[in-house]
Length: 413
Figure 1 (cartoon, helix red, strand yellow):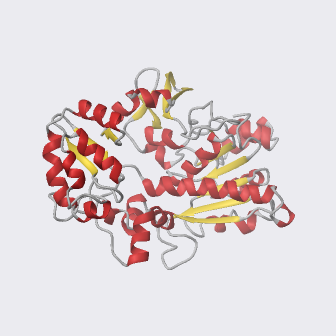
Figure 2 (figure 1 turned 90 degrees about the horizontal axis):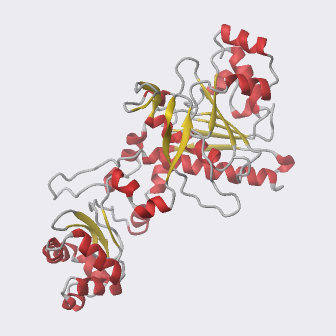
């Protein structure tokens, strides 16, 4: 993106799977030139995370998994074996010409190769170097590996997700998407942008970069947000409440005659209007339910009263009536219904880009950020493995075709 907010910023992305690639994709969406470094022959592990895979022109599976597609658009891909001295030298040369390096190797791995922050800042003092690990660079767990579900468990999210133990099927529940990875990736992008601003706005002595240490566990704990605050302030351990919210009541899933919907009466006025729509205005002044705190304390009784009232309605009719009354509510959509929704389509949340392996454009979820001066208005498909190796090495490092060929012959790239 030539006119993106981060145009002129070059990122060396040594990360794999999801958290790091997600953060680097955010930077690419915002206009940065992102160079993804992958292992020769295999690439990012997530390329194999399928099926499903993108189909080629003949309808056969490619090596492009939908998982990989979700987190790597807008990047260039080069291959480089960083376990070799020549591969390490290439990375050092590239880092000297980049503003940002993003990696998610285990603690200490890149130091063995001379690719840690302390080593690379000698060749590029302006480098912003972001390390993402499961448990961070310090602390007793720092050497441990881990995946998203481990951090959802250890960080408390699973303890507050799912139905309560007193409900059939109750118990801790992982979220569908890998939220620890995604949230950590978002923290990485915002931290990198902040570090670049400090460097370039004169806040850093000599325009130096800095080191960013990000942990998936830390990010997951931070994302528990008001649940964590509830415990830290009151000492009360939050419980699982299924689809129930924590503000006004009722705030939960209800079953209509044909399908489930979500209703949130976030204040007393909305609650009164909900009662009016359901033909039971007297419930607004019921002594058990007339204030938010009372409805929270009596949530079980509240549900028992409202469930049969809502079960009489067809969902579309009730949603129209609630919308007219100013009561927040919505259907529980599957993803087919999400992308068929006219509002979602009007917001442009599905975008397409041509892909070198397919005659059909690859569809992707758009970046939700809408910027007036530097809009995110163009997308390129995730790269094939090593698609840009020759062009990056020739243009950025001024290597000759013969030099590149020699590296490829020795399986360095």
